[in-house]
Amino acid sequence: QVHLVESGGRRVQAGASLRLSCATSGRTISTPAMGWFRQAPGKERQFVAAITWGGGSASYAPSAAGRFTISRVSAENTVYLQMNSLKPEDTAVYYCAAGIGGIDTTNYAYWGQGTQVTVSS
View 1 (cartoon, rainbow, N blue to C red):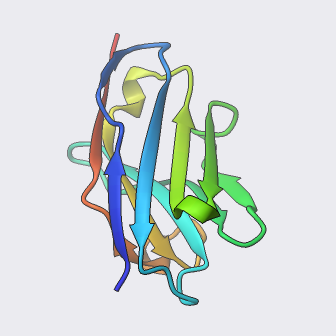
View 2: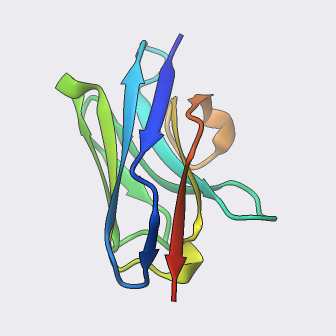
């Protein structure tokens, strides 16, 4: 069983930076990739970024590219999402997920409980 715990979310002002962390346990061969998703009130959960454990290949949603950086420290079984130049529209609950990768939520079998990020103008 894969267990994921996010942390690092909080309220910040527009333009600030935040780093989210996702501590993982129970990683298996069926979960070669990790993703970050977010869900704002009344909206569907949307892809933010993903990374593979092996080669560290990363991909980003257009809204995240150039501002966010996903990384992983395999020895610590931890995935990070560095978010810079935050905007009010980045306000959402951020989830990390473990699975086969890609932008679809259905590609990820395991999810954390989420961490709230609020960006005020």
